[in-house]
Length: 111
Length: 114
Image (tube, rainbow over all chains, first blue to last red; front, side, top):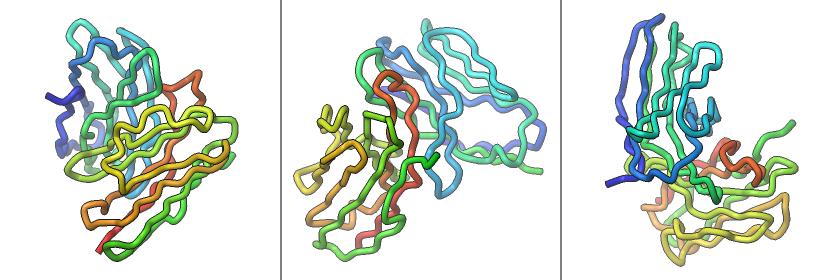
């Protein structure tokens, strides 16, 4: 079993739709939870990070962490074609700098 | 501010040749990470340094791979001899060790070994 599981998609939605991206994990020691966005042929860029359980909102993006279920989500409201990219979840233990990434979900937002 | 700088951006080589990938982290960052990304395995951490010292190299696939960080502003990842299965995109990332959750990635080096 992988430490972090993420549905690779691809996921295709119409412009304006609400998108839900999800990851599950097995290691309860994870404390920080990140979402990275990766455009084609580019490096991943950090979108948001949260510490422990709860929600965090940044514009059209909301990150949600449920530590009791070992489940994290990223919601994108009013999705735009420019949101088309691969979204990777990542997690880190409280100690040390080693990020564990999910496989990434490829998202396509159609005009 | 310049981000993480990697060179070369593309590399095509023949099996058996030595390959050297280079990385310049963001100024002020003291943690540096080397990742490899493939369709099959996703993004994998190869090795990371803290204050120029290798901390965890458990992801280095085999002895053909080696990494160095001679100073705070430069790191290399070397593959010798290279094999076709090493074909992948190699990313370097850096962060401040006090904020390990915020890693900044370079544009990557796309390696093709024929």
